[in-house]
Image (spheres, rainbow, N blue to C red):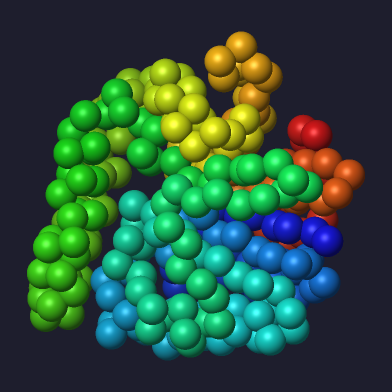
Length: 251
């Protein structure tokens, strides 16, 4: 059976082209797939399940239809939508996935992450991530008035975009030592993540053994997906106005 993985769609009303492409991906590419994994930053911003807009509810309904056709759907938190919760998952017929999580593919363990935890050179971001993901912080954030959460989300978004532009490219990318450490910690030689918007398949070694790191691209001028099948793994892209089949760039 086919397993599909995507990340960093950053869905928002201002980008209907991405939304249309994803709805097509659900209705066509996901048809018959065993599972779909969404590895974070599914939405550009998520201020809480109680603040779901009509647009966000329509996306949840599309996921629900896909789930009802038999495709299991898993959603992982990203740095933009870490307040996404069980109310959304119930409406979307999906399961909230911990970051990181292990899955089995053809008897091989595969580690799935959003990817931001691997960017350890960005110490300021890691401190902020640790603060915002603290259970007490999450509780406080979820209980702030919606208007306050909207203002805070807009402020954090603008600050994040400004900070990324000012940082060196290696700081906002993964740290090789952290990649190896994480693989050793979880006993894997294959990891798949998003976040960095740098799609590729990287070959490296873990304790002298060959390993791979598969990086999903963000959906902007094109869409990106990973397909896991009994015959192998492929990372591919496709135009947002095209069928989400694409030609594999790496196998």
